[in-house]
Length: 83
Image 1: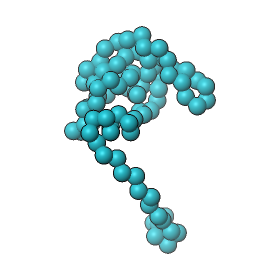
Image 2: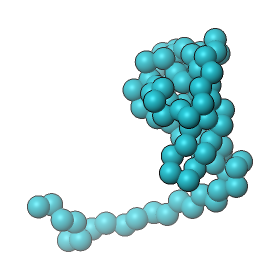
Image 3: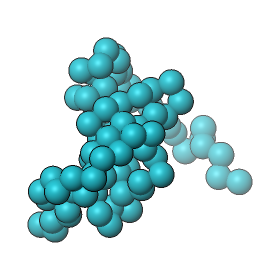
């Protein structure tokens, strides 16, 4: 999902219902299309009116063949650069 229509290489206007988030707000889906970021092309991305950020679905990436690996990074106060 994104609220930025300029991300789309193909976009079709739709009356796609609404999505809801944790604070019980509901946002209207106004489009659906294809987004390309670098070499990644993903279809069926929703354009959500008023959304100020992009949400990436890990499940959608897995469905198109990507492998996702989460790793815990450990930091200590002595290894951080606070300058």
